[in-house]
Length: 315
Image (cartoon, rainbow, N blue to C red; front, side, top):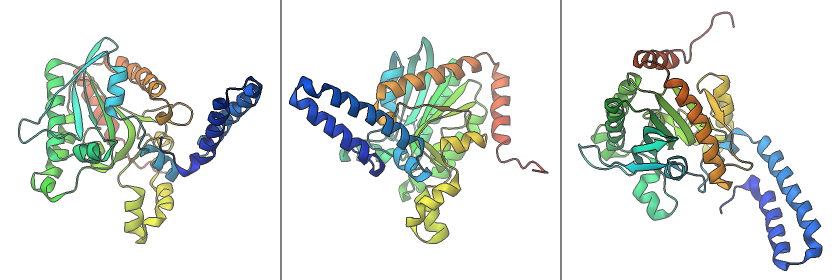
């Protein structure tokens, strides 16, 4: 497993425990238990005090669970559907029909790869226009079948290549924003890793927006922001502070609705635990939304996004 610089003390203790266990001596049992307790406490202390830039790196952790990792764990069944019926099948976005806690749903999410080959196939989770058009096709299918929608957001941003621009990247995202605003079915979005710019929002116009505890959601990356403001990407930690991109910041600003807690040490350490938490929170919000009429869902979603960034006089 890959680890980040601030995780090094934890990894060192875990390696020491592994080494002692390999000796197979009963006399070392108490020492091992003591070290395991120290690992738990050290992990809690470190993760309690992470800075925004450290949370950004954690959100990008290569071992973090991705959309299909969650799909395999929270759905009793799912069938992936492919293609936008216009150009091709963008592998950076996955989606299809699923059964979630006995509820038939449509799911859509960004999908990154772990190996070099997988990342080439998935384009590092950066969707082309056909990806957003595939997502829209699935959203409209959900509306036709009166099925709730669950989206999983995890992308550095939409792909900025020439081909993507030629095929209408901006138009594809803009159309998704417009169409999602008027969907007559419940929509729950979960930021599971990186929520980058319009590439994230292209599947994120939801009645409820949730974030995993160590995920981020921002109009631009800290490195991009620092390069523009200070001509120095090394100022990324300063930019991360200013961007207010953490789940905790965004909850206080009213941009998201709830934070989903992650297992101790982050979702990458316990896929099953992270999936259980995500499942519980999504189910709670989905059940609440399913009580609303189609007209109420559209109105609630509209008011939610219109209220963001409102300036209150006198404060």
